[in-house]
View 1 (cartoon, rainbow, N blue to C red):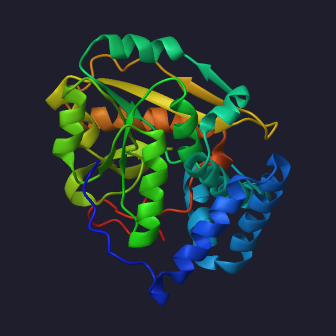
View 2: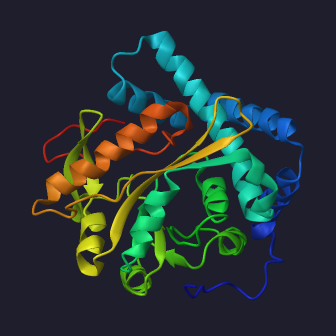
Length: 304
């Protein structure tokens, strides 16, 4: 596990909001299933009304990616997105605070043999995950079948970061800071599985522009770079809550063939094509709350 510079004490009042959030998440993890869903939807709708800035970001993303939708359809999808992400808070709490074995009866793993075949190559597996609201619960349920490490962004609050890291350490083999490229390469070369999500905007300096739903999106070059440095198989993985709101599906695709290629934009386009495919299955479960198209090609106008 990566080293953390955590303070010796968390008694200071500045940590009290984080303590409250942690306590709520711990309690939420143990609530009855239907109550979790109801509370999650309520939290999402509260955020819809209370945080207009995020509502604007979601609406902008949906207008860019789904121009064929009417205003009414887009508004419904935006509300469903907030509700799904509200439920995701309770799902995250469950993934961090409880043994995932209690949910084994709720998960179906499709394409499991693809992961086994990739692992059998002996050069590590780079799992391409996506920022769905179900992400951390997906990692917990995936751990019932395969042990993997995870690349993550440390939280700005050191107390919550410690809580988050402790929870994820129960799910994953190692948690690796997203800036620790050496750590990722080392674990892959040792033959481990590493869960990595390349679907956010990391800025111009580390990205190329590739289409995502027909919009030029700054897409990180690191996926191809890691594969080239390690020889690891690159395996796309999807995870969704099913329409019955009580079961989940993990879906593993075959390892990408001839990846990386000789062109960074082509490699990024292949990754984005998978991301599109995954989002299109259940678009409301994607984290549209982040500014995916923040970085624009030179001379291009801002979108948010």
